[in-house]
Length: 435
Image (cartoon, rainbow, N blue to C red; front, side, top):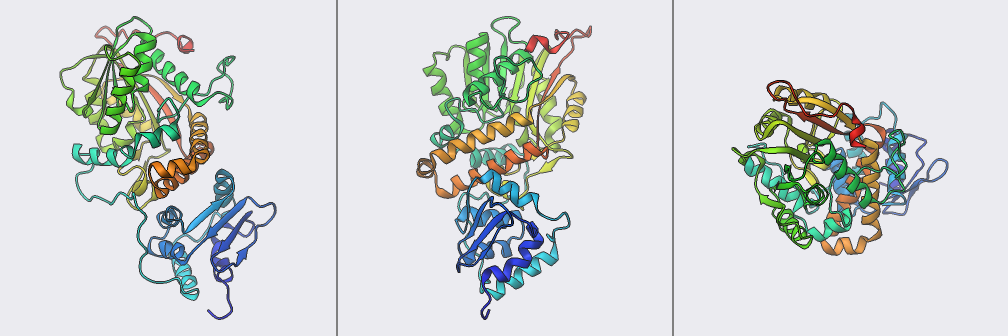
């Protein structure tokens, strides 16, 4: 490439992708640098030619993600500030299509970065072509995401072992305050579980029968049993989750009130419950199975029974397919539905939708807490799983937090009830009963 540095070869492409006023410093393996404009938001270090090879072989977020997971790219500084800076200065007409691919190809050729596809970083879920959302394929997808080590999850999620949006509400909150970042993650998770219990009416009388679909490590079941004396059946298709949930429940002395089953929610015909909670599970169902999902849960509820569906949403819907980073490394087969479509699917299944609440700012705070847990115990996290897996989680959680902050992602609790033949629902007149 003559006397041209890597920075000189890639500067036009970077300007097209992230703008000419980017506050990010780019360092390349040959020591060349593209300096930031204004106050530096952090540094992206492109450590080897493999970073470019990943992008050439998989243009877009998957290639960039692979470069980061493999260690060929590093981010130095506050990852939230860096990711925000990279996206905020990008031109609206950034060349991300065919022209950008050819320009990247040409720049890579000039710096000698073309060659064979580099090895894909470990922990990548390979695409499966058939059987979307069959029981077998769902079990495999869940195993990929959740059966990576309970100790790793405890490090990231904290003692509550709750892998869903918390609710950061201070003691003096009157219902009009923003999410309170001073509330601890554990207290915020407890507040979320308590809100769900009250929305489901478990405070009406002791001994109500609750089904917790996708029960995780048992936190919701334990809160409902301990606080409201509910009789809980929790189902999960993650072996690792079921084993630890049973141990946690036994250690808490709640085994008489809680049964944890390694079971698909579709295998519960003939059982009846007073209430159903589904917290952070609906993202694995898929829009084509939504009708079956809600119809199945409706058939498990008695008259005046309630369902609380707590799920990430996306305006217009979003499929995490095998061409994207999240679909390949985090949530194979995952899908986010528009909350409007979720409500319509519930109504078609026979639910009367009584309440919809957005908690997206709370999920941003939850994710920031999880990233802080991971970063503060990085070496331990790597030893519990692998550096690649830890990198996947750092990138995915930080990017997701920004998505919730800017509204690209949502989190909605949708409460439905099965009216009795006379139209009775047992619902309170206002939300005041929930606090």
